[in-house]
Image 1 (cartoon, rainbow, N blue to C red):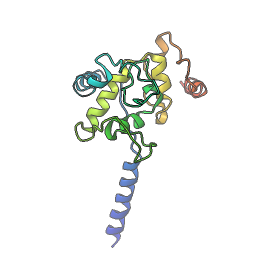
Image 2: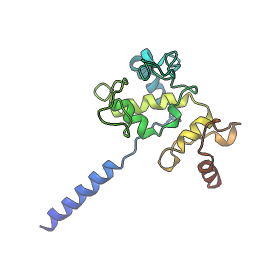
Image 3: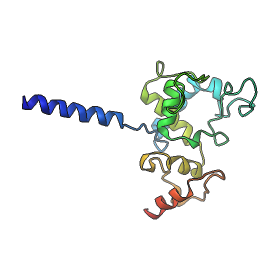
Length: 175
């Protein structure tokens, strides 16, 4: 009976920790970035562009709003989302906070790509961003995971529309 109780507790802890897992795309991992580039070119470039440039007029609010793929480079807004949200959007076609039955034009890649392949694509995308944009995006991740390793050796600034300056100052003070 004692063994059964321990097993139940262990399974409960394991399932609780699985629910708390946060996906992270490591843009400082060259092998992961290279793998992600290959997958991106096959699975994503037809909509988001071979140079991550997105489709023309992606921001236009007309009858086609939401149908045009946004850029994934520094001109887009992808950096304004945590890795977990980007992972969910790529896997399911929607952000976790989006209404379950709302219309989305982003295909769900969960049936075509493994979790590791999705993270590789996201690592490739993030690797193209300037250091300040990567720093700002990392502030959205748990523990500010993904802060670029070269921040202390390069000149950079946060993006002009970044509101995470106070968080960055806390991160920088702890270095």
